[in-house]
Image (cartoon, rainbow, N blue to C red):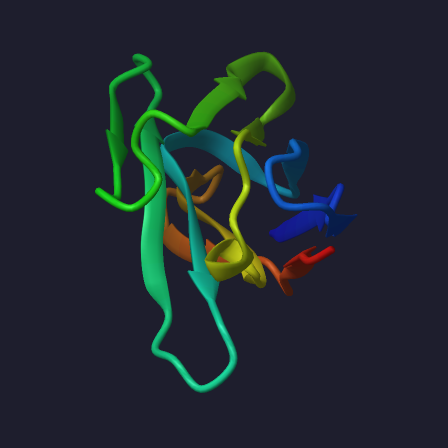
Length: 119
C-alpha cells in the first residue's frame, strides 16, 4: 500500500493551499484518513481526520481555517488550508487506517509534503 501526497509549496501569509493524498494498492476499505504535520524542532501533531462516513475532527489551531474531505471512490483525502499563518509551516503527512484485501490492517503514512508559509 502506498500513500502519496501532492500539492505542497510556498504560500504567503493569508493565502490558501490544497494538499491531496491518494492511497493505492491491495485495498479493501479505508476507515479513517487524516493529516498530521511536523514543524522544525517540534513534535508531529494531528491536524485533522475524516471517517468513511464523513465525520471530521480538527486540531484547535486549524479549526475554522482548514477543511478535510475525501473521495472514497478514489481513496483520496484532501486538506484545504485557508488563512494560512507562518506557524502552519511544516511537513504534512497523510495517514490512513486501511483494511487490505487479505484482511490484514495497515496503518499507513505518506512520505510528506512541505508547506511553507512566508512572505
